[in-house]
Length: 553
Image (cartoon, rainbow, N blue to C red):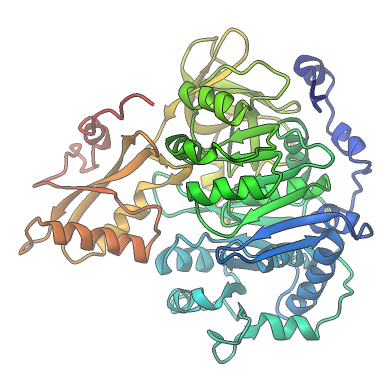
């Protein structure tokens, strides 16, 4: 029988202290705290310890030890320290390649603030994020350089672009060549003496009104992440951990740096989800812990014949982004021979704060129970009153835990709006059952959850409105059997335009190329007018009522 890191949930929750996590990691939680040092440099003396197994889309393979990662990130830190000061914002826009992980660690070593933008975003989405926080440096690849150039046309703060290019293609005048600069840089670097209160990470999250907000996390964030990787992800010596999340989302940074805090080897595949490729990789590498999104598990289930001849080494699997159906959980037990454990968190919470734990009974469809050290509840969003079991309210949390966000970037009023009393309101509706399990009921606002992505209607509607044929736009979620939800757009056309399949395709392509590939409307309906309140506000509730049901999973 497997011995889990958390074998008695109630006992640990009763006795838990954050210092317990650091004690188990043989770490004294020093006052001076730098995430890069604690996740990589602590293991650099063990040259045989693997930090990263990497598989490229063209068949390339690379294995990077902690020693090699420490040395490469030192070189990058030396390159970057000539371009930025501590506290400056450095953003990446690149695929899952080893250089991306080197840039992450190297940036943190300098004391600069790391941010990342997923490749699904187009020039508009990139430009807003970089301009909002006055970013100084962008790290990208040759293939992405033209997209970055378009974004930077309206971003005066960016002084330098670092381009990863083996052969020099894609590098423009004034750019910093990653490979040339790294070759000349020293392998020695003195890591910045940051404290737990110093800024570390800045990731953007979509909301219901206005553009995306920058969510700021401090160096102390690492303590909360370490706890989740210990107790929910249940990392064990010898594990190879495949978290499929991209560094362009905070989940990718959580699982990458959280795994490395415990000295765990991480597997990374460069490409996007493909059932056949994933089956081959699970056969090639002895992955013991898999962390993905419900959409990936649902699509694997649709093609589970690909797993018939695969030698699986899984002992644990997890999911995040939206609730798992009972059917997917049952499939996991039958086909993967593991129970897929649902987890819950947000960019603001900085971590998975409600989880199903390996030694705890899983109730399919439930989010699980709060992480030890975190107080969570379902409350009345108007009063902050804790609601009794079975009553639907807003999922909330409070308390001084390390991974909670420091605030929205330069938006103190928006930060304050998230609270009622000392409860942080998640915007998610749910209830708690008699045994303390949390259950997700839906969003309290108009944010759309699709394939694990959080999509704010404002940005999508704004992008649609930039198309010359669109006079007005409103987007809502439409239930979908594989993706959970997809974006559906209701469009009022400008004078002189008529509905057509070609126009629908053109509008979709516009959003996909200018804003983000994951945010474009997969379904478009042309209407004569949008339902509105007497004050002119779009009645999205009425539009959601038109979308129908997804059917059984």
